[in-house]
Image (cartoon, rainbow, N blue to C red; front, side, top):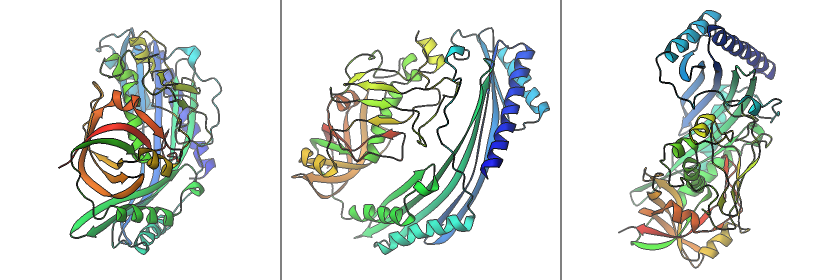
Amino acid sequence: MTQQKLDSELERLKQAVAVAVEQATTLGADQAEVAISRQQGLSVGTRMKEVETVEFNQDGALGISLYLNGCKGTSSTSDLSPEAIEQAVKAAFSIAKYTQADEANGLADSELMATDPKDLDLCHPQDFTPEQLQALAIRAESAAMDAGIEHSDGAHASAHTGLKVYGNSHGFLHGKLTSRYGISMVAIAEQDGKMQRDYDYTSARRFDELWTPEQVGQGAAEKVLSHLGARKLETQTLPVLFQKEVATGLIGHLVHAISGGALYRKSSFLLDKLGEVVFPSWFNIHENPWIKGGLGSAAYDSEGVATKPADIITDGVLAQYLLTSYSARRMGMQTTGHAGGIYNWHIQDTGVDFQQILKQMDKGILVTEVMGQGVNTVNGDYSRGAAGFYVENGEIQYPVEEFTIAANLKDMFANIVAIDNERETRSAIGTGAVLVESMKIAGN
């Protein structure tokens, strides 16, 4: 879809939101908020250089939340005609009459609304035919096979655009356009009857910022070939280096633990830790929602609250929770503008590259994959299946698999000894590989 068509559709959606808000307040709601999120795109999957899937998606709906004497009613509709919107508003109003009052309900405070949202350059539309995306996927598979892979578990190429509009009875009404492109490849290799599987991918808001399909295919091939001949480990205690792709998940447990939903329910191992030391004194996390074209950029959150750069961790101290208006009221605090999640996180490194951090570890495990659901963010217990490489004398010796790494997240966070400077750029969590001083390795 062209930029002109996207702009026209965005204006149409803004009009629908404005109508819904007006109808809700006319009906007698104390407050009302309405959001529309629409996604459309094309994805093509190939396997062994043959087309396997062609998926075109176009979906979205208008969601209404209104508040009446502390009670909340919600409703949604995918039909944006005035009649359908009116029915949805009336349905939400009826529901509100039968829900329990909650003094934490309601819109975020009006003075926190974004009055002049920044243009963060998040949309770069580019149309593709299925044949064009198919060609990209096949190029990725071909590159993997040229690198020594005999089997592919599939490659995908995709192009998507998104339209989001939010409005409320404070007078806030804004919309934004986003785009996202991706290429991914899953490679399979076999040795002595044992199969290994690994992948690589690229993702960006601009198509011309993607890695080439050849880079993706070669990356997947190199990864999977490096795991051939994987050995088992003996049970022991060793340093663990989380590869950057895995380290984003480790930091993701911090995100959950300091989010308002977990905190007001008292189901976080970091409850009441605001202002306390959680990480080493050199450790810092800075959040910047305003990076042009950033995958985690936003001028306002999903409640219309203006975003702003913030320090989440300062010199190892937890400096800020991640709160919505509801969770903030439940905790007697003010929203931090995190309705909808985090923004671009920059995890400070220790000035070493990947080879240097291996040397610093000397002997330990490089974890390249974790599996299973063994993370308890209520008490911090961490136990997950893993695969990766055994490291000795600061050099990778051989691949390892079928072992478990275990510790408590409190101890893991406190005992991070280094982070390399080869930062992950395909996620809102920008971290390098994370070296944890010691973890229990359960093997044979």
